[in-house]
Structure formats: structure tokens, C-alpha cells
Image (cartoon, rainbow, N blue to C red; front, top):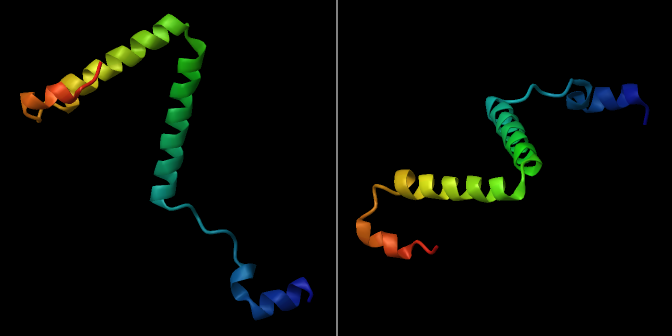
Length: 78
């Protein structure tokens, strides 16, 4: 089957690729940001990596979980 006859029988193949959706663009942006963070993390010394992870954990526990009752703090393994 020639390309011309395929276009006649399947008009969707003749159209260009659709534009990315807003969700796809957002996903690509997040993926790019995550990649940049991994790149940065990979270039710093090991002891700085450990410190960054500890600070992130402390920030998560103190800030992101503050809505939980204090009794939940015993579930946090160190």
C-alpha cells in the first residue's frame, strides 16, 4: 500500500503529531527538575549528601507531619 492510499484510507495518519497537553508539559518540567536535583546530589561529597538527607528528613517530620498527633512520633524510626 502506498503512502498516498494509506492517507486516503486512514486520515488520522496524515495529520501531524498532536500538541502536548498541559499535563504532559507539567510532567516534563517535573522530570527535568528531578533530574537536576539528582545531578546536583551526585556531584556533592558523600558527607554533604548524608547531611542533606538528614535535613530533608527533619524538615519532613517537623513540617509535613505536624498535623499528626504527637503519639505518632514513636512510629518514626531513626
